[in-house]
Image (cartoon, rainbow, N blue to C red; front, side, top):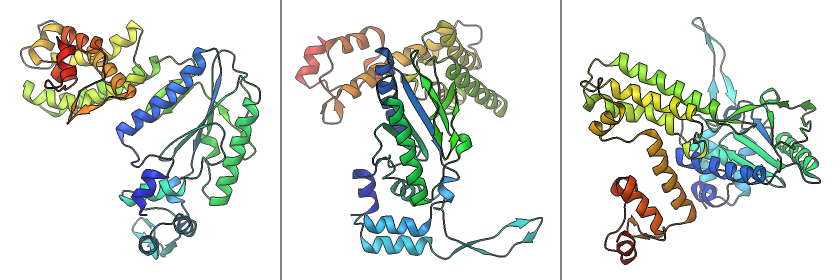
Length: 370
C-alpha cells in the first residue's frame, strides 16, 4: 500500500488540506449534524482545538514508526526517512549566521508530500473518541450533545483522550487558542479543561473560513465576507485603469465574488439587511463598467449576462441539494433522479444549461422537460 492509498481509504482526514470542495462538504456535514440537534431543542458543545506549530513539530522518528506500522511499502517508508533525515537549519540576524542545527521534527511546508504525511500522522487521533470529530488539516473539533445524560462527561473524557494522544505522539496543543462554544438555549454551559487549563468560552469562532456564532446567526459572516470582497474590489479598481467589461468582469469573478460565495449554501443570509450587504458589492462592481453607471442594477446584470447573488444562491442550493441526495449520471451529464419540480424551476427562473447540464437523449429527462 502506498501513501495515497492509505490516505484515501484509512485516514480519517481529507486528502488535500485546503481543498475548497472538501471544506464545503466537511462544513456541511458539521452544520447538518448540529442543526438537527438544535432544531429538536437539544444543546451541543463544540471544542475548537489548535495544534501548536503543527507542521513544524511532527517528530520524525515517531512518524517513521507510524508509517512502518501501517503496512506501507518498505521502499516508500525508507525513501521518506531519507527525505526527512539530515536536514539542517540556521538563523540569520543582521547578516550574522548562527551555527547549523539538526532538524529532527517537522514536515516541509510548501511540499506536496508534507500535508499527506501530517494527515497520516494524525489519522488515529479520533480513535476512542465518542463524540463527533471533525478534522481538516490541522483544524480539529469535537462536537458532543450535552443536554442528554452523560453528555458533559463524554466531552470531558474525549478531551482527556486527546491529551493522552498528544503526550504519546509529542504533538502539543496550543491551550491558549483552544476554545469551547456552547450552542442551544438549554445548554448547561459546562466548564472543560485540557492540560489542567480551563477552555475559554467563545461566542464566535472562525470554522473552516466561516464565522459561526453560538446563536447560529450569519450576520457576522456576511459582514466579514462583504468586507473582504469590497477591499478586493477596491484593489482591482485601483490596480487597473481600464473599465471595459472584458477586463473588469473576469477579475471580479476570479478575485471578488469567491469571497461572497465561499460555503454560502451553509450560511445563506435570510435577513434583508444581510442580503443587501452582500449584493451591494456586486452592485458596485457592475457600476464600474464603462457605460453602465447610469443604468439600473437589473439592466446592468442583463447587459453583462449575470445573475444577482441571491439568484446564484438559489441555483447553488438546488445543485447542492441534488448532489447531496445522490444523482446518477448518463455519461458525463447529470440525468436523474431529480423530481420534475427541479427542472420546472430551472426552466421558469434560470437558464438550464448554465445551472445543471442534462442529457436530452435520456428518456427520463425528455419526459421531465415536457
